[in-house]
Image 1: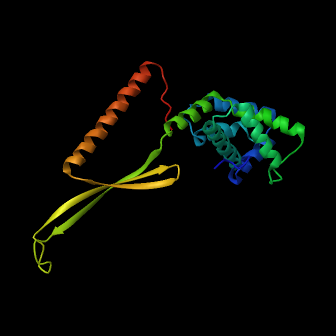
Image 2: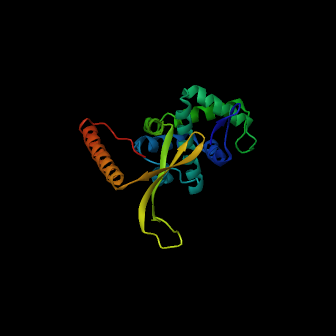
Image 3: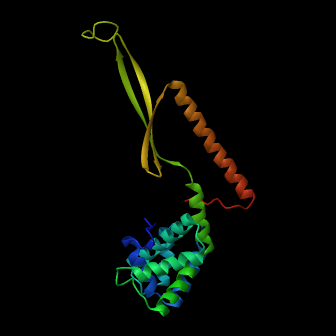
Length: 228
């Protein structure tokens, strides 16, 4: 994860991506921007990889993948910071200057200026900007759903001597919700009876119908739904 403590640092998992950016020619950068610009805003980097590989025949597939992973991460991080492009690229340039990775690091003013221009070109593709803003809006909540499970139990009921067989039993259902939040992840357990289950099924069915209606409305208005 990207961080500012106190200045932006390049995570090790993305260092190879910066090495690739340094190795690309101006012609390569234009090819990349062209492919990215033609992609759908909902595209993941894995969707773009097959289209980009033929444009960069001299770059190993693994490096192209690392490059795309890094680029997508940069878009997401910039959207999270809501930083102007010049300020963000300036911070990246400083991170490159201060990097401990010799393949990434450079203090040469001409090389840094070249990298800044490349980064501005790569980080201002409209389709990816739309995607990163959509993802930021989609997850701008205090708690985000991760998973759900219904736990079913049968509980015996005694009315007297527990050494005897129980006189009856009750069936219980527990809804387990897993979610993420700023501090990590959490769990919530809720008891459900039969009516609660029917209510949940009805609410979820209604939600699906609402989504279908809104998608249809968006299509009639020529508005793209940015999923992903």
